[in-house]
Picture 1 (cartoon, chains in turn blue, cyan):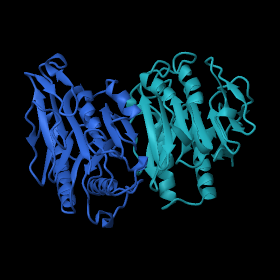
Picture 2 (cartoon, chains in turn brown, cyan):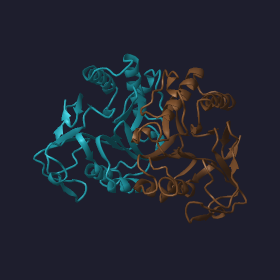
Picture 3 (tube, helix red, strand yellow):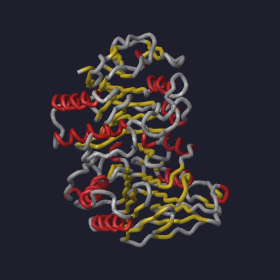
Picture 4 (cartoon, chains in turn green, cyan):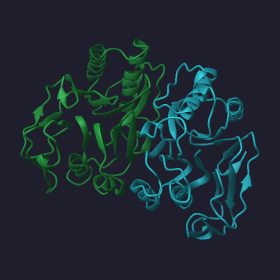
Length: 253
Length: 253
């Protein structure tokens, strides 16, 4: 299995505190040694970093932990391979372009028979179930909508497609095109929404704490979604089993 | 205008020496301050780094100059913006997926009326002429070939499409899907092929030299393509004006 991390915020926000926790689980406090990746939206562009080795001692991950990148939406993943060899092309998050926007996707779980689903437009580069499932979502959205539909129609369509995939096994997944953050939960996904009054947060996996009151303005709203809680002194909300939720600018829709 | 850098090699090769020269031109020894990017193929995957700020003093570029990434094909670009704002989504190289392979593209020049060309499948994310031209190439290849054709048919098709684009202005460009490196030259493009017996090379833009005899095996063949020569003690071949050439595993086809 793998671990996911996502962020949705109403202002460009630094992910380093949460990414530091996730990266420790990539081979040190967790067994997810088979690669990692993170995508940060910046305007319509995306900064992507991928490494098919363990995150905990990756030089590239160390660079990211020291380099402030601010985004409203980010998705990260640490991998413990089940389907698909440990290779760069099998390292999440995956990206595709639809309606002139870059879509980013990461997945935790296994899907039985997903590769029997038909793909017309989007083809996978690697051999994971996950990338195949992502291509299938993109294919269906493209087929159904020539241009980007309203947010409510899009949310409904993505929710329905993700529900189909949950029938094939475990489909904890994060998806975005830079605005809304879509989350599918089969069973392990939690989130926390931080807003004023901000307080201190303390990581579980590393002796690191941050006082968000010093890092934010009173208007900031930031939600972090993760496979398991990342901090020990905050209350994380468990997302219901077999459900789909959407975050917009830091708030649950 | 901008500067291009490409590598084609028959063995995974470190680009850092050449990238160091290019990065200096990104705001220090050259005026290309409006962003930079580099894509390294690794198997079927690609490591991509982009920054919409000047390369010469970029922390991310500094990291890459110290981090050995070995590829058989790599494409890099430093930007001096003409069309399209200085933003991440307008920063070359651009990538798209076709026939289950990741394609990487970078361009130097301006194309008049390119946005009047019809696009069916691939849409740009940013606003550059360059990304639009790349989408048009991908669109035409996809339209023409359901699956990847033979190398000779593909070379011919890409050569023809690039010749069409050269009619619209200046189209110095590098394109690859990880095996062959395709180069279009309107007027400024040079290359050098290094093979045994390897010798010393000295950069023009920085006091840096490397003795490739210590870095290579006798079977290695590496071609570097660039807008202008990067070293001062080697003989670079000038690519003919208005031409298209292909490199495979370090050698000109």
